[in-house]
Length: 138
Image (cartoon, rainbow, N blue to C red):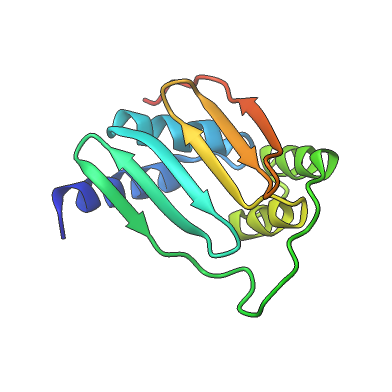
């Protein structure tokens, strides 16, 4: 494995070990940022993830949300925000979160670790951007 993959895997393990149940994403994001992750792009429904890091880009395959042809749900900002708030409150697992944002019409999302923002995109150019808070990692 490359140094980039080893570094990313170590950061993810550290983040998972210390991540609080409520408000866990900012902790995860800060752990990854401190490990040199600059940007993270997710494609739905394949759940493939691209990490742009200071050590090089890394692609992580994911578990498909569907394995059959599927109509893409209509972009629904209210449903997306509901999915975000449920996740932020610790009420969903990550796979449940991915399923909920897919059902809200999200086909891609991008995390900018420097700006502390996540941008969510529908297939017809729709978008929703949300900032997340800075946290301190001990």
